[in-house]
Every structure is written in structure tokens, then in C-alpha cells.
Length: 562
Image (cartoon, rainbow, N blue to C red; front, side):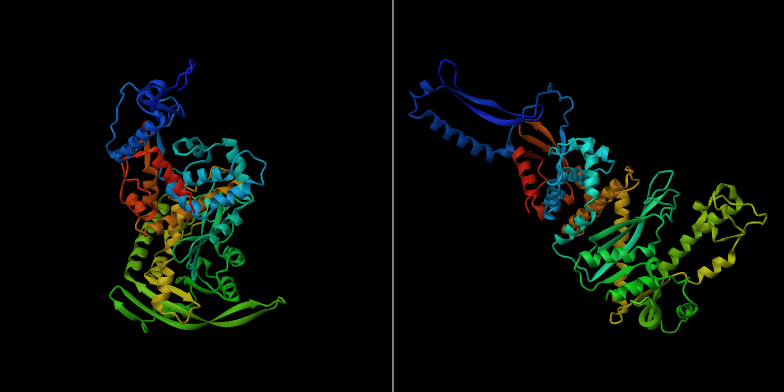
């Protein structure tokens, strides 16, 4: 320090960042004296004490694990300061940057006349969707929980959604270009829907067949996933679109944007239509679909019930298959339709577990049917559709959905139950892949559970619905955010050896937080098996109880290295 009298005073100080004030400061460790007095003892006092400081720093680094902490019980928290910060999102940041999403959104920001960064807003919304899913406003209000600062306003968030919506297809294409490896010999496709708590439908949100049996307007989402369970792409459709009508436009985009070559499309019976099969074959792709048993034609039903040909592998399982001709209609380039015969493999198996499940599921519906017969005034069409098939003489008002009193007595349809019981436990899979064994086809089809689980993740862990935005462009942006969040979680799950559920991983990352103790020292208070796996895979060690500011900053610097 230089004083006005011209004298210079030497001290040894410790520099650190004061979190309560948000500024850098220092604390005097040792007062040394005036420079002119010290020169009588040392030829070059400054050089001498620099060497002393270097030795002190070295000793401090070696003794870091044994640093003493002085506690001031009178110290108060600063009003408005959030002392506890999440650090777990560094793992999400690592995958976000490996996908080069930061570059994608930074490049889009350059063309905008805006003071905010699309990348910063997207990071906040994606990380918040994983760690604490909520509305966009609540995500903004909670931005102080993150170790790094996000510098933009709530209005900037809503403005950014409009620009994000314009990049839905480009962003999906970008992500797929930066996935390290994909197994796309087999791709899975399924459809779900999301409800909106609004009174009047619009162009996108329409009344349709809700997967959750709700009366609200919905939108349809078709999702593709690769063999390893990693999402490929998604597409939104108006809520009144039939599931079977979504595959062809979605698949057309897959073929247009991604060079996957020949693929085998796997889907459930709701997608098994002649039009979809023709489309698959014209694209030179294969297919594996389930086939409804109860709705099959008579010849196939007879084949299912015919005991000959089954191989009984155990008391609980039997299987048989055949290659059978199928006639489909194909329209040529001149608009003329002609019948074409194709060979299709049909695999039929019976499982005792499936039979038990079918019986249990039906028992619950039958119980509801008896309640409906007893008290029809308590039921409407949208909440009684499953039970209604077991009730004779039942009719509804087409406008209100209320049960209409036709004067006929409601009665339980025992014959309907007997007919359905014949098919309990039977399952049919149809495929174009004639050379693959029955077991290979069944294993391929069973992978479809991963896409069903992904829908559960988006609806439960990511809380993609109900949706709190109303404009169509904001809705498009919302589902892109959910898709990116799902993609990051699936890639992280795979990197951790698929040993942990999505819910477990997200909860762990949410818990990995630190509290500022003093100067540059932070206290961590959570560790589990996931944190150990993260340390092994990414080198981010969150198992140490105390970390210095520099150590934490290094973690975030490493999370942004590609």
C-alpha cells in the first residue's frame, strides 16, 4: 500500500470473493512493515516476501483438507441472497455442450436484435425442466439457485420462446448430427397426447381420444427412438389426428433429414394399417407390428386357437409362427390402385402372465360396469367408455355425453366377457423380416417398452403436462425444451451404464448443491451411488464435503469443454 507521505507499506493478504456483497476483496494475513525499514534487513523485501507467499500458498494447498474454519454465530444472512446453490447441473451442462447445443443457439442469437442470449435462456429452461419442472415463470424465478448467473428478464424468456419455436426441426437435426453413435437398424415409434386445461379447442389443441381419458383438448405427439432407447425426433399433430395417420409424415421427415439407410420400424397395433405397411415397404424399410387378436379376421383367429403347431417351451408359454400371404392395395404414379400380394411372418404366442394380466384388467372394468348399471346418473361417456362395452341397452346423448334413459333396462353382457376370455394371453406380431427367428422378432418388439417409458418420463419426471403456455409457437417451444431434456437424460443414463432410473438420476442432480461457508469455501451435503458413478464417468467429484471456489469453477469450466 502506498500512502500520501510517499511511504510504501507491505502486508500479506488473502484474496477471495465476498458472496454476500458480490465483490472481490481481501483479508490481511500478516503486516510486514514499511518498505524502507524492511530494506535495512532484506536487499529486496518485495522479492523476498513474494517467495514467502509462494511457500505459504504451497503449504495451504497441501493442508487444504485440514483448513480451520472460524464460525461467527452472530453473522447474518444477506437479505435476498440465496446461499445454497445447485452444482449438479454441471453434468447436464457437459452433455449439453457435447451436443454443441451452445453453438447452435449462440449462432441463432447472432441474427436477432436482442440483448439476451437464446443459449442462456435455453440452458435455464432445459436444466430447470430436469431438476425442478414447473412453469416458465417459476423457472425464471428460481434461476438464483444455480451456481452460475443467468442475466435476462422474464419478458426475454417469453420473447425467446417465439424464436425457439422456429428452430424445432433444425434443432432436432443438429442433435442427431452430434450424437456420437446410434443403433438405427431398428427404430421404435409410438404416439401419445398431452392435455390442455382450456375451454375451447383451437387449430392445434383439439378434442380427441385422450390416453388419460380426460375431456380436455389435446395435442398428439409422435416420437421415434433408436434401439438403445435414445430419442431421435418427434412431431406434434392436432389432437383429433388418429394415431395411425401420424407415422407417414413423421417417417418422411426421418428419411429426409437423417441418413439412416434401411430401418425396421417397430410399433404397436394402433399403427398397424395397410397404408403404413405399404409406406414402409415403398421406403424399402421393414416393419414389426403387433396385431389385434380380438379384431383379427376369422382365418387368423382360427389359426390362433388351433392347438397344432405350438411349441410348448414351458407350462406358462407356447409359440408358433407361419409365413402367410397378405394382400395389400398399392396406388401407382398414375393414381390407379392395384392389389399386391406380400409374404408376411405371423408369430403367435401365449403367455400365462399375459392371461393373468388380461383377467385382472378386465375384472376392474367389470366392477365399474356393475356400478354403472346400478347408478347410471353418476357416469358420463368420457369416464365410462371402458365399462360400457359390458353393458347392454346403453346409450349416450351425443352433445352432453350423459347417459340417456331409453326405457330399456341396463344389463350386464356376460356373452361379451366369455368371448373376450378366449383370447386371454394370446399375442400376435406381424413382420416383414422373414429371415429373422421368432425369438429375434419378439426381442425386437419388446424394446417398444422403452418408448412407452419415455412418455412416462416426459409426463411424470419432466412434467410436460399440463402445459402453462397458450400460444402455438410457445407450445412448440415447450415441447422442444422437453425433448432436449429427455435426450440429455437418456444419454446420461446410458453413460452411467443404465444402472439408474431417470427419476433417480434427476433427483440426485437436484440434490447436489453447496452452501457458502466463508470466503472461498463451500459445503456439500449430498452423495449417493449416482454421484460416485458420475465421478467415475465424468471426473466430477461431488463426494468431497468441502470444496474451494476455484475447484467448483473448474468443474463448470470442464463441463463446457467439448
